[in-house]
Image 1 (cartoon, rainbow, N blue to C red):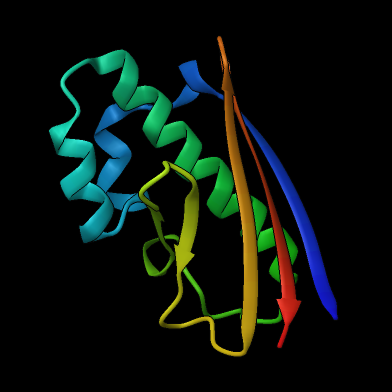
Image 2 (image 1 turned 180 degrees about the horizontal axis):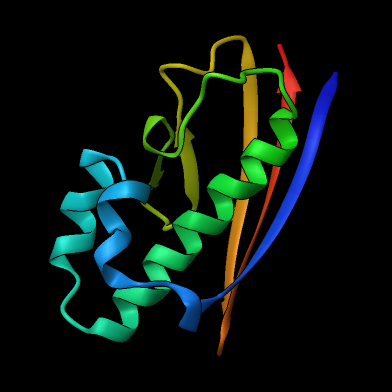
Length: 113
């Protein structure tokens, strides 16, 4: 059963690179620090921010104790993002992140198992 759907859009220029430690988990920081170009760092950070906001909206109080740094977003071998979810039990989560020039947009769907 679907418990929630969330969507978020983030204007990339509003992202500040020095905020990455408040948004990213330790696993995501490793990936972030390997990115060479600042423009790609902005895209990565805006995408992660947007997908975590979309997930909060989809959760809609289901897991009120979850913080941004509790949500680990990784990519599979084909590049698709997925939620590594040690704190989000009994849920199947589907996410999508997209970038277009000045914006990052993300969607999250939470399904109860």
